[in-house]
Length: 326
Length: 263
Ligand SMILES: Cc1cc2nc3c(=O)[nH]c(=O)nc-3n(C[C@H](O)[C@H](O)[C@H](O)COP(=O)(O)OP(=O)(O)OC[C@H]3O[C@@H](n4cnc5c(N)ncnc54)[C@H](O)[C@@H]3O)c2cc1C
Image (cartoon, rainbow over all chains, first blue to last red; front, side, top):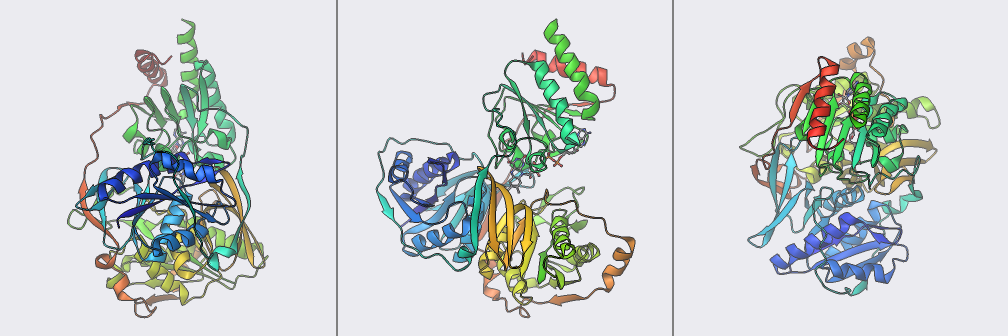
């Protein structure tokens, strides 16, 4: 039977939005293949109602496995067990980080084909075809599967969350055994928030800074510009500068940070890596300042300024202030 | 302990990336260099050695690829690896992620490493999961995108950013760890190290030498099959301003923003 097994990531009592998107998409695709989408959750005492709630997004059954949260290999064990029990032709993952690790590990365990960064999937002739952008998003390749099970790992925000009107789904316990190597990793602390708890999600103007700011103090240039815009503006950051401790994690945009869609996204000293782009490409207006004319960010900005941010940002701040005052 | 570092040659960033329309695969011809992300993995190995908490007998660079991949190995050796291993065989050409991970795992198995390190992603294929594949084939625990790693006798305390913030994970060795580029600042090789790199032992092995099952590798045996390529939906090109006179540049930006009522 052409069923689809969808991984659902949960944390702190809520299902991850990208997983809800994946369950919704899985339900749609499974219907087209004449099968069902089932979701799988793994954790310590996963609440029954949380699991059952996936029925609203189209899951016909939810498997719940007991095991350590936040690590990939226990899920490889659990999903391999579920797949061995039969009925699944595809495993589907929403965008994120854990899903990438689980999907890749599962591909190895099953000797299955895997496509990553998938932005769209369609059913055709009883099988699924995955679309995966390549070469810095300048082309899209289409991938089919020869293996018994095909593994599809989507890009962040690739799938829309859709409530299909169904009620709670039946929840089933999955019995499985942790492999020897899965027992060698233990979570010490999870989800630590580094830096101040800033709120950027409601801002209509975001001034984002990256490694091109040169040092932590470089963020002052962004803060001053945001201040000049005033009102509903805030400062955002890339993973590179958050990892470096220059700016709080709460302000990070991208694959392992926030997804935003402000009226204006002004990026200074940001190269425009895919993992950053996926968190901000929905912005209404994108302005980029970068000294490298070949920076990928210019491929998806509405206004690109090739130049040194240290020269441009201070003057721009003054000019915006003057404009506001006039 | 023995550390193996997986490295890869990638097209130089300056060279335009292309897709070969006859195979749908990346055209990997043209100028090549060591994947810049891999230099962080070599540096991490060097820092473990220099840290002295656990004695490191050997750091071995391992790659799979065509003849030209030797250059990436030389670079890895100039950055500190003691020797290198090159899996070079027609049968592995065209392998997908899972098949590549299998072939690398078989090559690593012969070395019996205590720790396998690799970079956060490859600069060409935009893939950041090969570590998870290799780990599964080796039956070792693994973690990707690690930006801090403290070693004690038989385990690693690793930190990385995941979906909900920073995680700290304790991992028993042997293990496979992919490191993020924030983990360290790779050193530059000395001229002496560059000159000496070609003299360090380089072991070239075939698929048969490392007991790779040929029916599990190569384009024909890969589970993911490329069927077509197409252009992405066309998007209107953005305006570009080259900053020559900053006063003028800023005026143009403000006018652009004002037109869209963003100020
Ligand atoms: C699994 C995974 C998840 C990830 N998640 C995220 C995520 O959530 N968010 C994220 O942002 N990234 C993420 N990344 C990292 C991402 O791939 C990039 O490494 C990162 O976005 C780069 O940040 P950056 O643009 O600040 O730095 P860089 O790529 O180093 O770019 C700096 C830019 O500044 C420019 N510059 C330098 N000096 C100046 C100057 N004086 N004036 C103007 N321009 C200048 C340079 O030309 C360059 O383009 C992830 C990666 C992986 C593998």
